[in-house]
Image 1 (cartoon, rainbow, N blue to C red):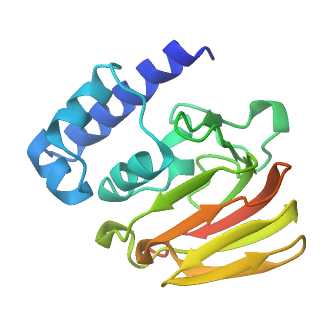
Image 2 (image 1 turned 180 degrees about the vertical axis):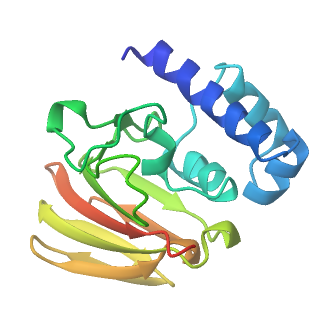
Length: 190
């Protein structure tokens, strides 16, 4: 999918979810801490949301990034082939996020693979809409600094850190090569 098509799809999906939940732009803005103007620009495909911003919108809409990118009209299958997994590139950092989990299964757990560029940094501020969600971050290649509750954890290949999604955290690749890691996200909601 071309970047312009993806921006249109992201904007349409946010608007569809917002309307389906009976939320106004102002209500979604309040719940996500994203400005009404920015949400409107995203819905009209005039702006590309960063990872941090999109995760706040998704949390306020009650779903994970994986669920956001899942095709709702797909036939549900327990198998997700690599070439069919949804991929999204953060326009702010260039990090690439692959939704590994089969979509539509009803599982509260999502598995994600991330390729994180050397020198990149992304900050996810605390977000009450994500409270109750947890994640394991498991580093496969490279190195990462993960800041959680004001503590910097230096991860090397094979290391894994557990944290609440709503707590707020930051990811930084201090290395000279891209890092690759898995995220196992538990939405923890009924």
